[in-house]
Image (tube, rainbow, N blue to C red; front, side, top):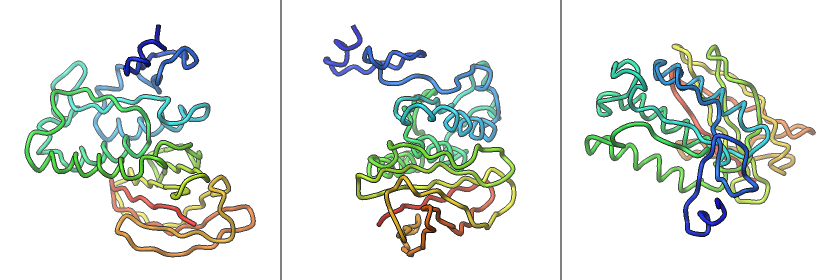
Length: 231
């Protein structure tokens, strides 16, 4: 039956493992009680779910929920409404879930409420479309998010132009500058790589004999940075 739905252009997320029967995605770490955590807690927990849920499947095989309103409450500390008054937090949610490459569902009444909010949503949807190939590729598990230091999502694919993308998150209340050790073996690159930052600047970095990269990063408190990896 699910194959027939696919033939008609309908794709079905199912909270179980029926991929060979035609489903498109399954839930990753879904808990209703989590919907009443604060947005920052939901962000960290969401990255932990993504980390745990992509060992045996590629990101689009899992679905996550972007929570714009509370599940059991309308407490403004839980949701993001009104969206125009929470643009920074809304942007962090968009970066995280679009950047993960997972199947995204949205719980809320609207995607935007003002022209400024619409512009923000369009910006990150266009970003996802531009880098869709790498963002929906395999995730290499660098370290599980703890909320005490930088964490990252790293996609790799040796068969396309953009061999990798790293999205770095700073969940703390302080700016952090450090070197991150990234295993780039599965990008297929050897010797050196070109890193393109979110502001468009490019720089070459050497890889060690095992394909590891030491990447200096600086991320503001509660901020995010992304880096594109090319040959």
